[in-house]
Image 1 (cartoon, rainbow, N blue to C red):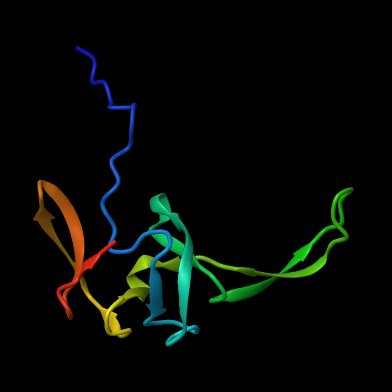
Image 2 (image 1 turned 90 degrees about the vertical axis):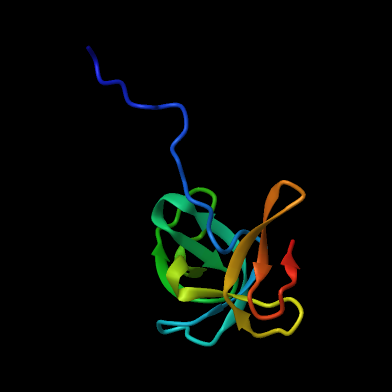
Length: 115
């Protein structure tokens, strides 16, 4: 008997934040800064937040670009991000509940459903 691995789709958990959410950084060098998530890297549990955690990268010149020192965003671990409550504007924990047979995220501070 062969032990076959499930290769069609890797299981990834549901995260408390997703692309387009406004978040606050709660730990690290960028602590206290806010921004909108531009990309979530699921297999590394990290996210890119617009205008936050900027690094300087030295880029070699190519046919298309001049090269030099480029400032770009670095990923931040999801554990260091907290969703900003859309109603009150303060950081909040995220809960999940079932509404009309669908699992939705809601703010633990205000109880409002997060779209």
